[in-house]
Image (cartoon, rainbow, N blue to C red; front, side, top):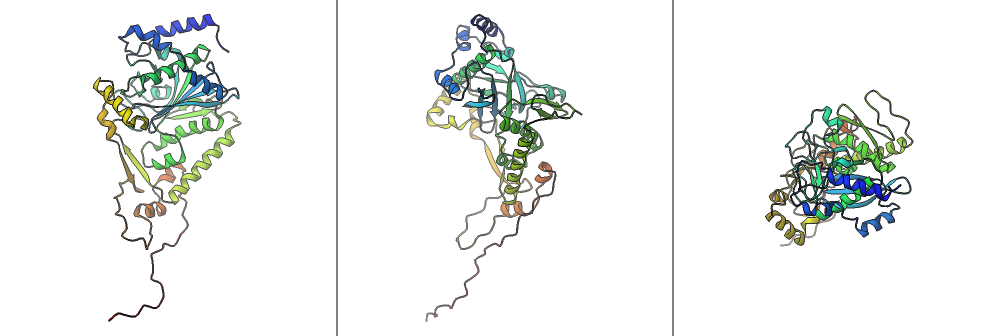
Length: 393
């Protein structure tokens, strides 16, 4: 239920005083205007379209490889629905979790954002602290802080948006907090947690950690409800209303069968990919990336303008992203020249190796032996048994 108008005004005044970042904004005359920017009419119409409103709770999901941030809104059905996806202007580091101060890594995991983590006085237009390190990360000795989603297209371990984007995101969060939402869950992933993506990066050392993140992602994808998140050691635990701690048994969960069915379907998809010889990759970032939305000529001119003003971090790194195809051992696959003729077909070396040998993926993911692909004959183009034409003199 919406707070009374007087309470809203008091809440907003308190919010303007709070500063989650250590930095402050030198352009103070514009600070209040940014923090009270109204939600655009088109976004309010989108809320109405999905059966939600400005006061309803929200949930945020972020994806590094795709460079996207999603805002989800609780609807009248009691489930979350996707409201809007925002292209990320800049993130830094590589795929994989953040572990220490200064590693330029954008965190991956499950975090909590409260009103006092909103910073209307950020030197980076507007910002909110995502909540790194969380309780699990602190227990593992991971350090570093002030990891933000903010404006100004410059990142040092943060999700950097355009100023217009962060004004809208900030406004949507502000309205939800004013209406009574006590905290917002922020889910940060290396990429969309699909079977195809996890198989594609199966040679990455972070695969066991990403498999754990997928458990939380699967729960949200199936139930469209905020998962309860806990931890045991270096693993997240998840539940419908309460996450089990170490040694505890998970409470009865009405969605357990449906979540298990999704996981089984994804496992079957990954098994079929390895049996079919699907390729894997390694992506090496010089220092993070940005959404392809910013690769148009018009946006490139804007980026050049920001770079000249010192408001774009390491623009040279954006053109230094390398994607390498890997074999079943995780070694680069040499590029094969195109065949001279099309009279014969045989599997490429990477296909035949991946299809017939275990690369350790099944042990790491399924804890089981690999599925043996069925033997199929390979056409090699044997000559037809027909009479030869007369030899010419």
